[in-house]
Length: 453
Ligand code: GLA
Image (tube, rainbow, N blue to C red; front, side, top):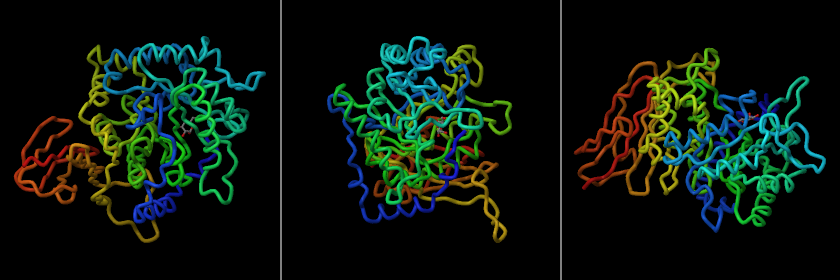
């Protein structure tokens, strides 16, 4: 699918860069991108929440106007919109394979017979926002292969494409890196190419009186070191596969970059897998309900974008018919306590305070596959009200007792701590500073801890 696989997985360099910034306190100085939206309101002040079809639809013919409109309706009637899910985004494959005679991007009129502007207007009429996708290269990522062609990319067309998207009413752009030239030797990543589109979006936005949220999709090129100055969010990982190992691998990669997250600028470990199990395809088995709760907890703890990717109308029908999958999908996506942690106005990404390898030591010279790691990990995230949100994640195949204490999670000095389990909703007041939980296999216990007196 993609011609840039080899560019991914260069994590050690990126980690080193992260540490340098941490120790020099240089993070704040990195963030120079415009964060102003309409009327100066902060753009992506909290991590974007919404829907994207890629994980479950790819380029199938079901990616069409009817599906997107039904999704918009389901976002409203299911309560997702009221819970904060705002964006309905297209991914790859919405465009015609050729630009028009005027050089402009055009929609695929078989999929979208009424065009993209009318779809954006439909989203807006329901109080939602609308997003599109492109690539910083000559073609997008899909359809690249023998006998296939990508869809038009933005390289060399930045000003015209930015204008087109604003004229369609677009609010959000995911900008990929396929089919782009290698970065210049003096460019640590893809800064120059992504800056051209940032400038085009800004210039066109000034004409239209609002700004498009800019989502950079260029993992593996030290993106966290340059993207915060250019965009509002940036993918830190490869595509999340529809399987548990892939989800936790993206979690661990993304957790290294907590220093870069702040209001208007977010690390993006890719989409939520909620609502997609099982597929019958052993390489894409989906997540169990326990694993779905775990991903949702971890993504919220890391102040990640909450972009879901499932057949929402289908899940809603299941919910209404009392089918387990539909019930679980909305039970996860509508957990307001977990969403509140993600959307906390302080905008801090949770940091790892302990990480234990659960697998036996490797034989000398052997390395583990990225998807075959197993850890028990605890993260803490400061919240605006002085509480901490804490996740205790057990990637093992057996339940596990996991403990933390107030010093480890960054709180101390109170006599009592009120602990709320964000999934069971149980509230306990602890006298003393140690907490122990039984964490299910592949599960995450997520709590808030509030000093009480
Ligand atoms: C890349 C991105 C995916 C998706 C596809 C579309 O693989 O990482 O999220 O946008 O391209 O082709």
